[in-house]
Length: 235
Image (cartoon, rainbow, N blue to C red):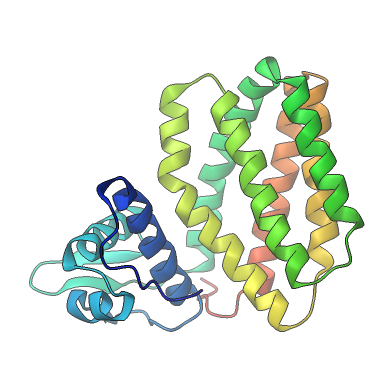
């Protein structure tokens, strides 16, 4: 992930900056740059990313609430060991939330918006596999899941999905980084098919089919991420 170099964003960018920092630190942890037990020093991170201490502290607090770091008295933020079991449990929670969201979205689906997303996914599936297609796939994954969240009709559910979105996306992006390094792009076609199954259920306004498709998609993602990752304790 590219380094953050902005030093004086306007106030309305504050939350976005914090999320970018959270994503960058998460990515480094999942890539093994920061190891379990290592202390994350606020001053060093602020210098690295070219920001003040405040957004760094806020990012570390958010990482603490996600369970990726431990916030310890007199030691600050310390990276904790993320195990395969942790990943499965986090993504199990995601499955519960996303399935409930897609159930609600299926009852409220905008056929024009859903058709447009479907067209974009089909266009992606027709592209040659490679890094550019991966970048498009990431954007479309965000678009689909953000639409489902927005259309679910439950404000509290929306806030919970938003709270965990950065962690989910970090899992996904690290997986893609590892696969790009291996020039292995078979997941592009698999994910496009899973997304289209969700879209078709939304177009049909079929909540049961939407939940089945989302369940299959999340389970597939868990299995894939655990197979690809090289920095997890298997316990």
